[in-house]
Amino acid sequence: QVQLVESGGGLVQAGGSLRLSCAVSGRTISRYNMGWFRQAPGKEREFVAAITWSGSLVDYAVSVKGRFTISRDNAKNTVYLQMNSLRPEDTAVYYCAAAIPKYQPRLGAESEYDYWGQGTQVTVSS
Image 1 (cartoon, rainbow, N blue to C red):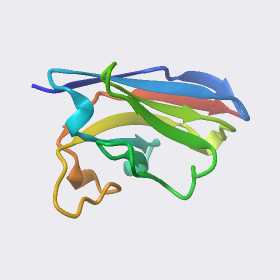
Image 2 (image 1 turned 45 degrees about the vertical axis):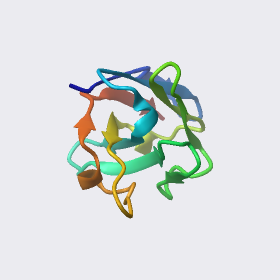
Image 3 (image 1 turned 30 degrees about the vertical axis):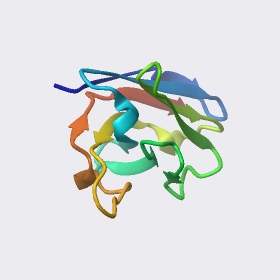
């Protein structure tokens, strides 16, 4: 059973930074594509960033491109999301997800992912 545990969320002022971590247990993440999603109050969950199992391809939502960076450390079985220049609209619960690589993967689609964490709250004050 694959388990994902997010950490690193919290309260930060606009313009600040946070680094989220997603620790994975039960399987090595080296064979999984990994993604971050978020859900703001009253809104649907949306794609934030993703990285392929090899790290050769990353993808970002337009709203976070240039501010957020996804990375992975397969030796530590951990995926990170570095978030800089945070804005109040980044306030959300952030979820980590793992996907068994599929033919023609769609990294931005929730349906692509097989395992999910419980989420960590990020609150950005203005």
